[in-house]
Length: 307
Image (cartoon, rainbow, N blue to C red):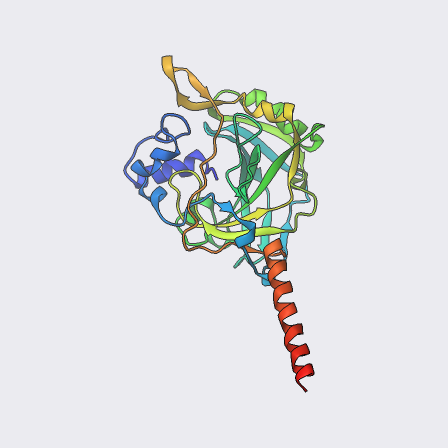
């Protein structure tokens, strides 16, 4: 999960640093983040590998409510040096689905790989996807993203995986066409997208999800995120996917040349003592349900036969 550079700068100032270029995915990659940011070495980090066989069914989570996602809104896209980030101007909220209160959408952004075999931050039963999008929300009662990044459960992030399809995804055509205008790293270059409903950027009627408590997936890795990772995927063509890899990073390589943004995902982190919940029956939950049901039937039958 990527925060805006302004929020990242707030963090860096807080820890006594002066520039947002102290981390990245190349020379200052994820394996080095904890050397500069202690919070990146804590025990409830994200992303994780979601082992579906080890998730815990929690029916009470129910379904999530998305408010304002259906209304066309003004959007701008920029290259923040680490990803393509879409800033949202409007009133879009998520609630229910086990959330403690209403959360407001601030932005969404993408994590992708250098090829189609990798790119997602989360894994599902060790399966990787070519890209993952994060919709970043903050607690509405806290008033802003900046006010929420140091509060427990201050952020709620929705994660959706992409899968390669034979044809282009028409809903992403405008966004992808604008990537050429943000190829270079320039946070002040805000390119408007065509006003559109945010439902166009996610799967239709997303329902099944996993839930766990974790962190930002970029420095400073604050452990303040309620993660919701959906099973429904977004389709994208190989050609569309390749366009994301044309963006240039804020990081410099040899001869002071900028790297391309590629493999801008953090490796999965240890789950440690956390529990991953699901709002639907996974195969393990179904098996457990059947086992309990069968056990009850056997007990009833044995009781009847003993009489």
